[in-house]
Length: 542
Image (cartoon, rainbow, N blue to C red; front, side, top):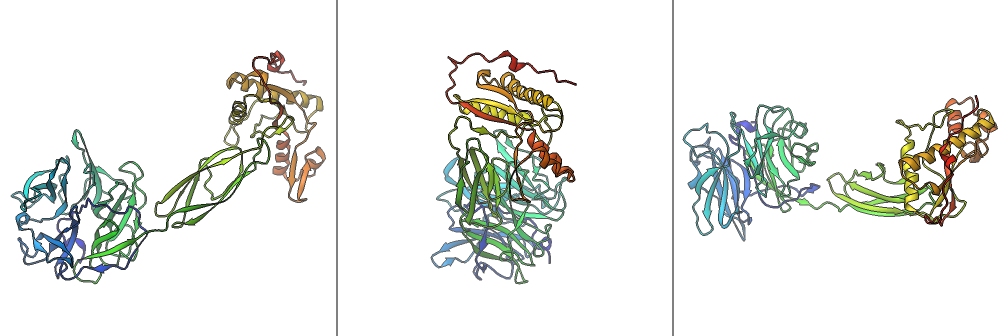
């Protein structure tokens, strides 16, 4: 028998604190015969203090409306456990009754509030909603007062479920609306100074072509638990949870609570009170009963730092961060501030690197690492980020593979970080072409960098000297075949001509721009003017 043959009105809400991340549970225990009977027990709701348990009993011939009615029952907690339940006769009628939540009136601490499904009109097909009943702390009788005025909550079907946030600012509704993905879907309404908002769909990630019912929202509003038959679970209906990504219609992919909680039969109406889970299940193949289990605290996500390697030279790029995860729940996701998503990162320059690690149950830790560098020394060569030029020109390349402007901005940052630094800006060419022309081409490329830094990035021109070296100083490259560093002269590059990709790559390594530390005592008050010729490009011979 499926859930629609069992319960006519589905609603569930709890204001008690609970865990928002699920790891494992103890073996489920069935509440004893004091609470469970041959009828269906579901929708367990605790009072704010946890000493009263409200639940729904269906298919009980003692119900006010008979065996096919559902009534509210109450049990009081004693030293021995839960006492014999009794029907809440003042709120039970021949319609379907259920408690949504019990708590303290936030506007008046001397008054209790009981949220109920709206079944206190004269017609059976009354517009669905939530009704509030009140009583003073010293009283025992509840008085039905008013409904929550949620616009658009006009439900044609018989099946509806609710959860309200602990701060009473958000209502999640399960029903079959006009925009539903399949059967019952999850919607939300938010409270503001203007009242409750129109219901909005929670989105297609959390809603499936099947049904989503019995929602329960964690106290901090970031995790939603619900039951569904639309995500290929253990059986009839399984309990899932999903984490909110920020907006109320943006949720993570639902995660099944696993075989400890879910069975091939019907499992729903889940909530967490502290670390105790309570839900309804017919896992023994008979009627719905109330079950409980305790959430086992997950291993804390702990980071271990194995090694932080700083750069070996000024403006070097051989820094490294090596970490391990000592404990947590695998798998882990890594997000570094430089865009890397690996566990360890290398080829690092001086700077701050922030890491955020998230494990599979949503635990997060963050850490900031500092990579340092040795002090600058005069005559030290600085290897800049990649600055490339169009072939046989001094026009910068900026495309999907290289952004020369960003590289020049890093040069400007270097000069900003070290205000007393003066550098040579040295450009090179490969060996193709006439030597004299290559010399002039390299000087123009150095001047192009100089002009951009001065005119666009407002660097003091007296701190930079553009220099061209033509093809006279080939770069060094580690040759994996010889397992050693090789000077990229023309003879060596020509030996790789059969490999077109490597041949062009080695030529590109020679077409580089780098720096050299000239002085460490720049003084803007005494420095002489920069030559005007640094702004003038030479005309290359044909």
